[in-house]
Length: 161
Image (cartoon, rainbow, N blue to C red; front, side):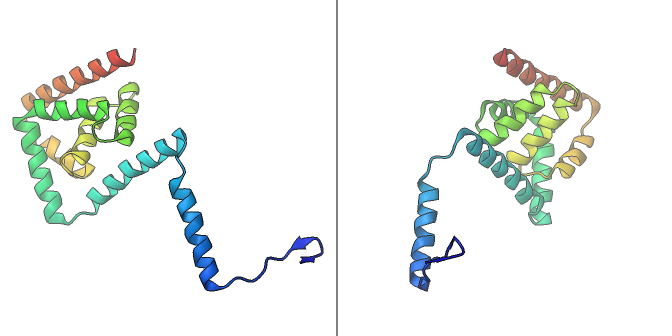
């Protein structure tokens, strides 16, 4: 059928429409995503994780903040190790890309940005609460943590060369 050169589709039943919809969804789901689609999906997943952490109940966020503060104060080697893991891709491709972008950006406080990134993805601490926890560290603890994170940054820069 045609009307002024336009094709008019035959009317379909609800059953046919749901079948077509399911087939289209199956076709989309079975298709292997391109590299660009994969990267976008992974970055979105990392962002979803951050939003999920931000929206967690206050009790959970405070508990996570206390745990992150304890790790920064008493186990800075563990925090630095986890940053190395993030740069290496152990938290997913999206987190790895974000971490590598931070490492490559010399115009930012890379130590602070990586610390907050790992606070979100390892300790489920929202960024604002991670900053508040970092401010509670003594100057000696901050210096030790920064030194360990700088070591991870140098290692990542060597790998990129």
